Amino acid sequence: MKEEDLSRIKRYPIVEYLERKGIKPVRKTPTYAMYRSPLREETHPSFKVDTEKNLWIDYGEGRGGSIIDLCMRMEGCTLSEAIRRLGQNASLDAAYGLSKEKSDIDTSPVTPWQPSGARKLIEVSDTLPSHLEAYLADKRCIDLNRARPFLKCICYEVRGRRYQAIGFANLSGGYELQDSGSFKGTIAPKDITPIFTNKQSEHTTDKRQPVCVFEGFIDFLSFLSMKEEITFHCLVINSVSNVARAVRYLNDRHLTHIRAFLDNDDAGRKAVGELIRAGFKVEDMSVYYKNFKDLNEFHVCRMREQKKQKAQEQTLIPVTEQNESKKSKQFKHKRK
Image (cartoon, rainbow, N blue to C red; front, side, top):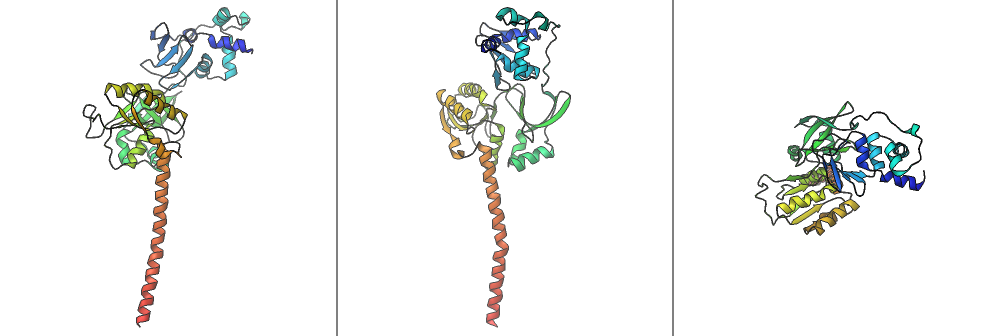
């Protein structure tokens, strides 16, 4: 396909593409439109289309892109197939002059779009199954006694199949999800998670104390496992895409001092920069784990080193006892 044709496809209005699938905006302004996400089930609109730039973003997932990216996600197809399907769109032909025969155009009746990969919440339980607890304790080195009050077991369904994952609640009633493999996701809506100690509440927090800000809940649980007691107000942003929400939350409560425990990557560094530009006093705590990807990786390495050292010390004890026993026997022999 010619570059100019690809450019025309990218300019095809996302709003019109969604309209053809029976998806209508909940709210529309001259510059953007808000939808309930077509990629998952949700009750509050968190899917935004910028009608001026013709780009979309799903705030619940922290992902977005062009109309081609959206087509690939919604229709589960490859890049080349998405381009082909968009090129066959009748209104695209008429508006942007792509040369296609009318016989190639899909004129079948429009049916309302159903997100094929949407996660449907089935059940929330206070008790994690043994394999998820083992994952947290063995692979992530999390202190389960301290972590349990913050976690739920989430049972959800995708395409008729049921799954279980560790759930971490956010401010809007949604859940951050993680299983014992590589899966990470969200039960919408996505939001930040403020955490207070037993002696704190939202209204009694000392404004002069720093707020510990974490990128994800595993990092927060790592911090929780490392400390005997947490006396600071904590905030888990659950994604760097939520920095703006975190800024609003902190500003509304006149909290100005932050200790940022974000990831050692470009996104984490960019988020720290955004917090600084927003006027906060920011202590970038990633300097203390600069050789690691994130706080949890540092914590895991630290715990395994401690375990290794302890094992070495235990192996030395029998040797020391044997030496002491030999010395005692030799002393008794000399006395005889």
